[in-house]
Length: 313
Length: 278
Image 1 (tube, helix red, strand yellow):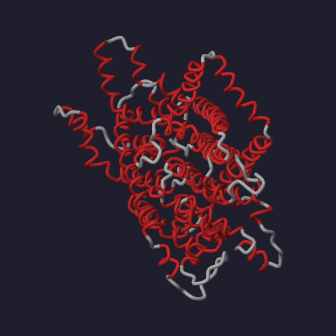
Image 2: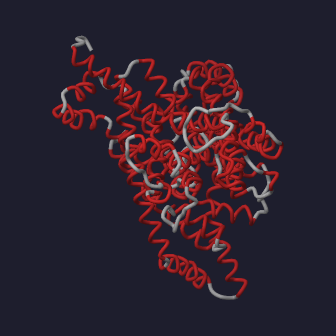
Image 3: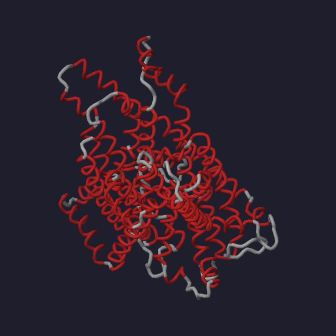
């Protein structure tokens, strides 16, 4: 959020007006950018103020107690040091990376691409029905999906019943393979997004070119890699980035399935931020985690915008 | 595809099968909700109810569990939708029509920075809400959610306006119509489907948002639909899955209804794919 606004403000139409020489032209541009104002106010207030406010307040507090502003920023840094020394924080970072890698970069991306390819060559009717089902699992309430997965993965749930039917003895998934369950849940929920995106990207590419990949086996797969993938490279970059950012923020799904437990085994960064701030009353840790994730997100955004800019269009 | 050889037919039925399999996998978890809602003695298994019953649904149809949360969620989602529609349309119009410098940067920044659920800044947002005494004020989270869905809404709106030929407004502008009048003309005549898609999209997202109201609305009479489902689970533990499922089902219905109507008449979901493609 912060990266949007910092990038957005210096580039906003109003500030670029300074370079316009003619007064008349200037007022014309000014009038034309007025309709942007309500959105800017709304986003500015709800996204910029929360980020700026803690700094303002820490300076205000330190001036009240008479200590210097340098002290305030020192205390700010101390939050990060304290946070870094807790084992749950390191654990949360590893879990978050695993979660993002397996459920977003691998899971949703690959599933979405497979779906987009498969659905192209499926019959029309099936395509619309299954397409709708996949998208429905995306638009439904996250809480409900969390519980549906919870019910599925319990010891007495459907997952184990299927395994029993196949003659296997399933474990209590909810305890032993929690990360896996949470990853599957996120793939289930998020695949629709990449599917829609890749379907749109593949639609102008001739059917023969894509289908040949499936028919010709290995050589087709290579052709898919060397011909089709480069054609939609830009789309893959954008979609992956959006998926990664979205997955970084997943809270409700994990919270309803596991509540972060047991023993922090599914405590990703958003969950940890919530627990620290609201369950343990350590608002300063919650704030610090939030800021770290924001920086990571800003980093990814900048990479992607640079990447898109390279294409020159 | 000019020649349909046997390998291609085989290929087609194979991919049909695969699509069907994936479809079933994706639908299975939802089947539990459907089955358990009407089951007199529900378990966590997806199975056909031995004895159908409306008991679960009857149990949850009370003011506190169902009706008030629906009202609260409706209010939040509706306010959010309307605010987004108005501000996004206003913002999207100049972005689409006038080639103001840095418009493209503005758009990229908007799309990548913030079209996503902002869970990580919620602690900061909570502090701000507490600072300005906005906690439990019903319209405040609606405005916050509006601000988080604005970027993608602006992006979608821009896409729609791009698709409308400029002739309409040029004729109008020659007649000396003002900006707002021109905008209204376009909205009334051409943009209605686009607005409907964006509204439904934003409404569905706000309706399903559990985290934001969970953090910003604390009073019991401010409980949203998503929180109500969560509470049933918390209150009764695993004892009342029938009610849990029934409640989920009821709160899903408006979303499903809206989504299906959008999908059918407006070709909604595929628009998103087009939007991402840019």
